[in-house]
Image (cartoon, rainbow, N blue to C red; front, side, top):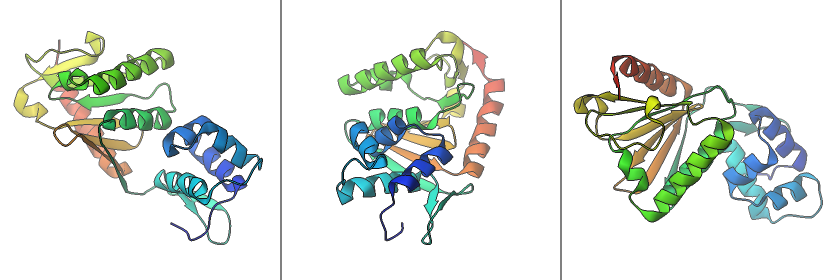
Length: 217
């Protein structure tokens, strides 16, 4: 991270590189949309912590701010983010909302226990919000879900699921979207988000191989 705070023009340029709207930046940084708009339009002097939050978020998404001015998008980068606490699944969902920009993209999930998304009230609410987003954006059928044979709990339309023997599914739930691999650790109430193109591509190829082996449910 650089030792200077970024300018409004750099924020706008960084959003353009990421193909983000102001709402995407607000959601990802936990800064209000009003504050983002005010800063970018020089309407008032923000708190340094607000600017730092915007800068940290953009850097986590692959933006490098150059000391001499300007910025660039790092193509081959690795970053790890952890979401934890009672709202860890909602934080994951918000990262998906901000990251999945192509309506033709797919979200791939290997889920050892689909029922976990709805077992706790606040997780059930986050799951319902996610399904509503999928309906609104047309992403509902852009999912592929691998689940264990005989464990048929469905959060999505049945046609997006295929089943594999338990030993091929494993015990860890993971999801692939955009350039991210996420590991969902239910017992720890934690999500680990890994961003690295080579790793994500390897897991995506492995997923598609298993998808071809799996049976419709």
